[in-house]
Image (cartoon, rainbow, N blue to C red; front, side, top):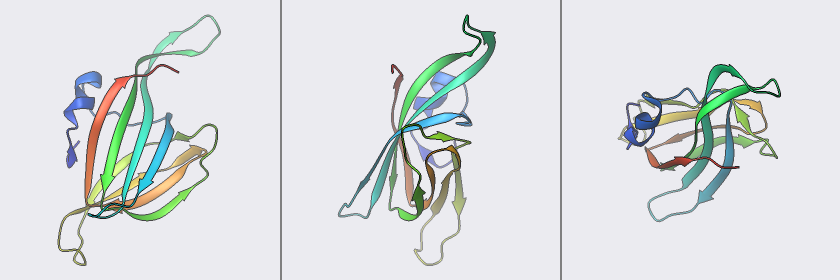
Length: 134
């Protein structure tokens, strides 16, 4: 994913940057730091196969807990966090920012159920991608 530092940690698992459709945000942490506010998110992401299990559900593969850190955050919206936080996608797009004089990103996690978030940041970094176990 262009602009996301260390994105190869995720692309090695999935062969590409996943859409994060139907992914679940399991943790959000905001922190005040000397270099500006940060937001860390842990997101359970997976690929849906065409296979159906014995209970009639789609079989998932590559179930992964992706940890992302966003630095220099300007939070616009963070609402609805509850017991299950399914997102439609994880959208990270570069934006022009004359106010800050450096490149910035627009990040959106549109809700399917629960968490809905939108913010701008200076940097997006993949911290880790580990097998997900509930």
